[in-house]
Image (cartoon, rainbow, N blue to C red; front, side):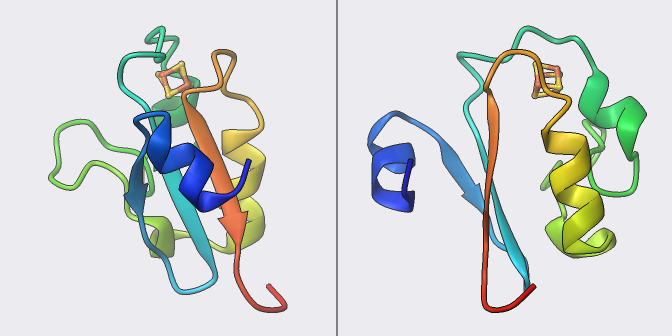
Length: 80
Ligand code: SF4
């Protein structure tokens, strides 16, 4: 899905320098894979709860790939 498709489906965008993260709360099944995977990027006690620049783009992508529900997506930017 491209950015517009994600936004149309209700995903919210969390911009980063090298990667943008998209999250859809209505799809999330609260497995907590994201917060356990990297608590610097994904922290539900913080606002915003996703900070895409708190890890490398590869690390952000790695954690998002463990999300079982599809609530998290990412789009890499540039050469990163
Ligand atoms: S890994 Fe995906 S389904 Fe699990 S809490 Fe995070 S966003 Fe929700």
